Image (cartoon, rainbow, N blue to C red; front, side, top):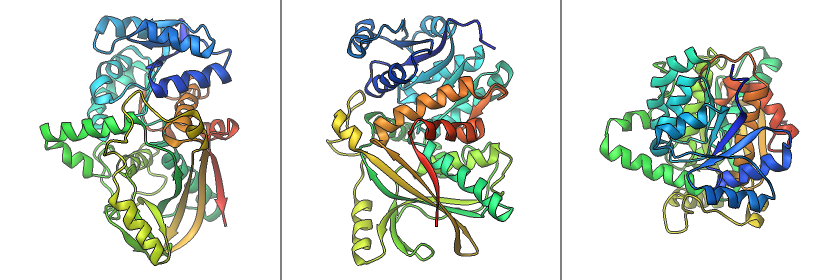
Length: 386
């Protein structure tokens, strides 16, 4: 399908901060790729070409103009969009992709919007469009970390573990301006539609009617008796947990229908650890004057010096049976995310020929093939820990 298209991929938002990083990665790593940059402003896109010393084709695309969308989608097999908040700029593009059989990846951390976009599921299945949300720091490390751990558990024990605890041991870097803008847009949508609250608080909101067991509280500091450490809320947990549960549902519940999952940040085991956890909980990284605006971000030096380290602990009968780490170099919200979505797009295009149309998370869409790409290109690494 779509083999006669002019481009394999169109990058929408290439003149934005994260979009530029995706463009830089594609130019540096994939010379043979047949792709184009898209956005509203031709001068800004030409400036990106100049900065990269490249001559990537340009497609004008304003997400509010149906003719622009039709023109762009008629030329490509896949749209990679970094233009958020998606609830403001993604509706028409995703809907048209589902209608026209064009594949699609985004960086969405907007569960309310993703829930609403399920209305295009049948259309995507019929057209063959593979639509994959959350192909950045939310939620690739979480989704693929649980997937990797549970596959390892089945190899070692013959069955999955009932519970996985994700613990963010370290995270050096900034949340992107796009993530912050998406958070504000969701809060605005909530004030207009109070029913959205039920979607946001339900860990199974993206599971198409399936509801599993009660999940652990993740909104306060507490001492985790199993891992013997103080933990604090992790701001990305609200979207990551929903995507992990959706993956389990889409894969026909290989983690079990009674699967329990939560994400927290690690403070430490001592009184000092409690103080650190409380300090983490008192700070909202999405608020304040220092949060980057969409299109802004940290310097290359800051991006390159970033990193993240996430532990996934598989628990059965109150004790840890298996541990896996997911680690990556580079600022998670920018440097690493731009590589994650690029590799997700290319994996979807070239490594998954038999994947039917539908609306996916990363694990059921790409699974081991995406892990292989991420490790091969040094984006992130998955390891069992003793």
